[in-house]
Image (cartoon, rainbow, N blue to C red; front, top):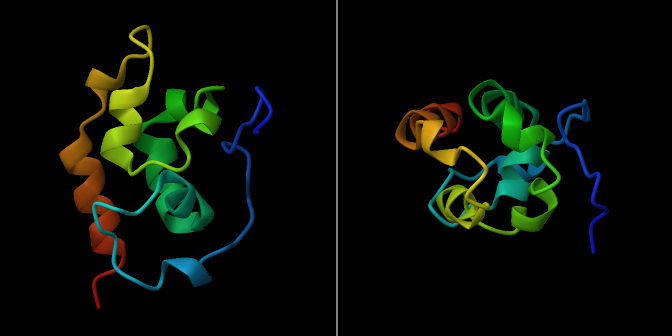
Length: 94
């Protein structure tokens, strides 16, 4: 299990090798965070999630499901999912 204080907001590791493939609806939050370019986009649009202890609970989910799985007190409705997905997909266009 992940520690309750898991926080990827300060991770500076360059791990882009795993994201050579295009982002799909099945790409997990963990895969996105592992890539420094997509992690930057997530930090920009979802700073609360990236610092939240709930992050560890949704790492294995695709982004949309992760946002739906957060508790009600988490303001996931403020996140513009389509805009985030568009920016992420633009990173991996050939």
